[in-house]
Length: 272
View 1 (cartoon, rainbow, N blue to C red):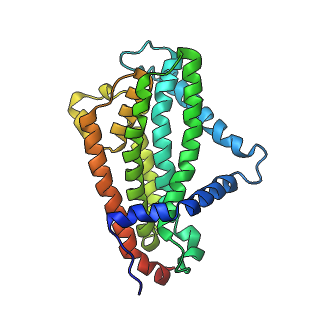
View 2 (cartoon, rainbow, N blue to C red; view 1 turned 135 degrees about the vertical axis):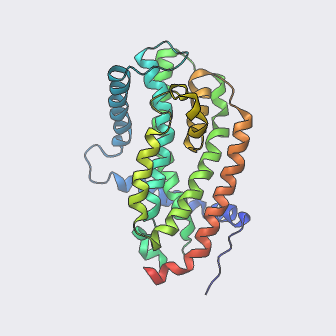
């Protein structure tokens, strides 16, 4: 039986070698999602706007939540919330799809020449498309209400790149495990819902008692959400020590997830 390389170099080579296939597959995935609907791809714009409106009303009006150091305006609350929500939605879309991504592409499993490892890349690229639309909406709203964005927005790639590596590592691990354990997709759906409320999306970290704040940072979404807000809205330089830790841990998770996928993919055909 064919052996599949699982070293970090193969991870990078596979991405580069199959870049055009990933691009074409992601485009087909995005367009296929809205095929047959009246508004088509415009739903990718209206969905986040609708959820943002609901969350802003509930948490700013009903629960009276406020951001530390802010003016307390609804526009400020909405933009700070939206920045965190963009990161969470990107994560949740990929992670929720991961356990089913091989199962929904069984026809590719039988094709020896098809690079199954790119399927999580396709899901990430599709999620990035929706994330970019949401980011464009965020930037437009910021310019309208507050003027030109802070120069610290240039630090954003340093924050999102390790986040992408983390997502890919988890996606590879879940994609493989989901083939052998079908309950994984149900379990992950619950976990992402729990993570949404255990992440500082609708509230600042300081809203928690100090004894629990360190535990909150065990959630991998917390550094990403907090650092994204720092550079986008508050105009502060990110915590480079925290970023360094995120880069190292995310690289390790990406490699371990990829290695697990490559080692277990030989058994996909037998199960499916």
